Length: 314
Image (cartoon, helix red, strand yellow):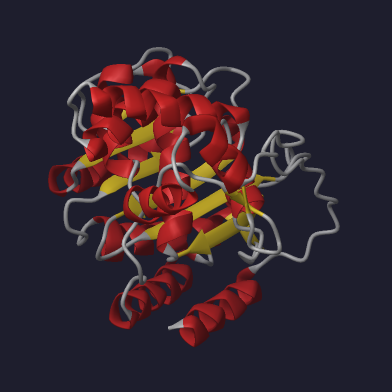
């Protein structure tokens, strides 16, 4: 599977545009405050390190930053989150529910939304390969993902970032159908107002939102996880729409897909907390191991080639 994943990455490079534009992009939001060891967190919360590791393994909480050495590092906010879980548990709430409630409350009421899916994946998963793709190739890859993953995954949470409403309009009917088979479906663009309860749910992006420059198709499902995200390079006002170039990442790694989904859901939570709450709860757990099966990735690749061949000359 890894070999095929790398093979497809290499083939995508064939469609990449060898531009001389210099990418000036900050990966992440600055220095991290994750400085506590697991021993520090255990001492501050009264739990054993074994219990903290067990919670992380079973529930994906607390979620540490990993050093290159593999050692865990926690933020000060993790202390409060663990203590909040303990208070809920001591009040009689089941542990997994207490963790889900605490995670949702933190994202809804305290933490600012992570504004960039692309930057988040670059920061959290620096090993993922990037490709400079023209919009026409990116569109082909997106359609293939929608056909092979979003439309066929079992009870998936799906997300689509379209930058502008005019880009979503041609895809509206397609995404309405995808939303019918998904557990939840959200689309992001420069709409003036949100549409809670719509199908898919329309989430407006603020004027200064970095996601207004991003493209994304994400399918978070146990059986068919996949994430595609891309950031439009600046300085392309005079470039034909289909030839605009994006710095792109795609992956079928469950952990990376889950991180991309969490970032999208945090953005939803800032505008539509009621719609976001159940999804935040679902995404609080660590994703199942493994990745999309070889047959699904093969089918996706075949569709990419077909779409590029069909529309590449336009």
